[in-house]
Structure formats: structure tokens, C-alpha cells
Image (cartoon, rainbow, N blue to C red):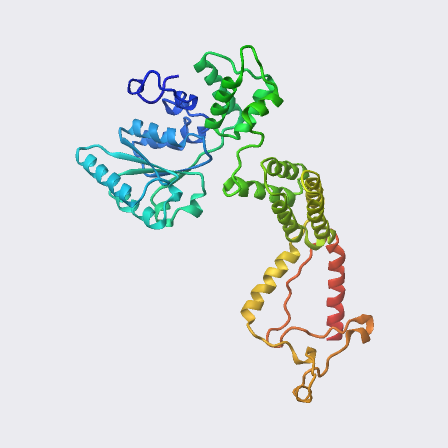
Length: 434
């Protein structure tokens, strides 16, 4: 397929990457983003309305953000200008804005595409606001980071955020078919290796085409690679995964919610995704400990002990054997009875404690090591619970001005069913003994 760029401007001998040669020429050619550019997509609707405002493209690498920006400029007859926040400073922005103003005076608008826009600081982002508001530029910013965290509110209020999705296996497979059509030769891979190549790309269209080029370069005449040989050739086993970006947090969130939802199979899947991508198992182990105290709690008091033991087992065994201990803990948590009653009780008690400030405990439960403290009433009337019937005195322990509070409300499941019976028994005895 022909490039979006004018081939006459390129040397006939200049090598061009396959991803560039297959760059879409129309919205319909963009793979995997039907929610944006399909017949009922939001971008399609914008173009049909004849109005295109400033946009923020948020999504993983290789999903078509730059390509769509170029096509939008073409569809709206705007001059396309591209900069990268990594290499541009205030002086560069001023020059771009000045050129856009001059262009506007001739009746030509400017679509300014800013790659990695989240790399700009707050002051640099604020410099866009006047030229966005007066129509000097139509801004299209691209970012792999969550705009809610990385861009300021002023910019987000002036731009529409569009989310790009990772390309699914079917979309990546279609790209490989187009690559074979473009090159006129089949990929020298067997069926399993071809599927593995798609997995390696991890939803990145540019990556799958780059990997395909690597395969063609490595293959000799008549050679067909199996899955094992493919791994040796392209030197990539794990999916693309940046521990400092959204993929990292999305997977740990998916793992946590799968455990909370008692889906052991899904939890194992996300755990293995993280391990396969090179995540630090001790990071995962720490999060699994948190799941034990936050989502299982006292419904199964053994959960915390098991997760701590899994962490210790990993430190003792190392990888890969120790990862099995973490996997075992994840399965245990997923099938365990769930309760956040202790977690909720702790948060409630913390709120009251902060509001109460420095209220003193009631004097009858305070020690009186000096005569003056005894004269002040410290310890007066204290009932030693072990001397009381059932080893329970029923006396009040809250500050007198605060009154009794209730924070912990265990559900009637798991071990907390037994705890609830005990609390109800204590409440009855407390009421009897006044």
C-alpha cells in the first residue's frame, strides 16, 4: 500500500521501514480503533459535523495516534505541524505559535501535533492555552500516560480526551497479512510461531511490523521458524511492559480485583502476565499481603500468615521456584471468604481519632503510680476483668465526652461469623452489667 507521504519527495533508494510503508491513507485503514474512526466513531462524527476541537490522544505505543493526527489534518485541510515535548522548549513553542499566526492570516489553519505532551511542565502546558482559545492552533496531543494525572486541569478543560486501545490479536494478524501483500512474500513462520509473534507485539502495531521485518531479515531461503527459533531470532520473550507506566498499574489493579472477586483463574492469569513481563516478584508479594489485610481480613485470619510465608518463601527460593509460593497465596486469597470489615473499621476509627484530638481516656482505666494521681481519681473504680464473671467486666473504655462508638461490623461469613457471635455476647453482657 502506498505511503501517506508523497513518494516523489523520497529518494528511490532510501530504505523505508515497513511500518512507514503501510501507514494508513484513510481513516478506514486505521486498525483496531473502530470506536474512534468506525462508521459510528466519535472522530467520524466530529468530521461529519465539520468541527474539530483540540484533542488529547491517550493510549499505548503503536496504536495509530500519530497517523490519525496526520489524517485529521488532511481531512480538515489544516497545515500539519509536529513537535515532540522531549526535544522542544519554550523557544520552539514560540516559533511554532508565531508561524501558526502568520499562516492564519493567509486563511490557513494549523493542526499542531505534540508527541509525548505529558513531558511538558505546567508552565509550558499553560503556554498553549491562549493559542488554543483564539483558534491559532488546533492542538492534538499524544500521550501514553493517564492525562488525568499528567496534564493540568486547564488544558483538560479545553481538549477532548480520546482513548486508543491496544490492537487485539485479530487486528495485528491483519497487519501481518498487509505486510505480506506489501512485500510480496509470506512470513517464514509456522502457525504457532506466527501466533507467538502477535503476542510479542503486545497490542503494538508498529512493533508487530518491526518484528516481522526482523524475521524476514533473519530467514534464509526456504527456512521456516518454529516458536522456539523465533524467540532466538527476535530476542524478545516478554510482552512490552513499562513498570513505570499505566501497564504496570493496570495489571496489578486487575490482579487485585480478580482476587477480590474470588476469580482464582483470572487472578493467576494477571499474576503470570506480570511475572512473564519481568515484574519484581517482591513487589507483587507486597501487594498480595495488602490484599490479605484489605479484602480477606478476619474472615480468614490465616490469609495474612500465608501471604507473609509466600513472601519469605520467595526470598528463600528466588526465581522461578519462589514465584509458585506467591501463586499459591494468590489462589488461597481468591477462594477465601472476603471481608473488608476490619479495613472499614480501621478507617472509621482513624477519622474519629483525628476529630477527637487529645481527649483523655477515662480516669478509671489509667494507672496511678503516685499518691497525687490516686487523689485525682486515677484508677478509681477500675474492674479487673479476670476477676469478673466470664472474665468480662463490661466497663466503658472510651473517653467520657466522646461516648461509646461502634466501628467493627463483621459479616456473617468465614471466621468472622464466630467473631460476630462473640461481639454480640459481649454487647449483651455489657448491657446487663450497665
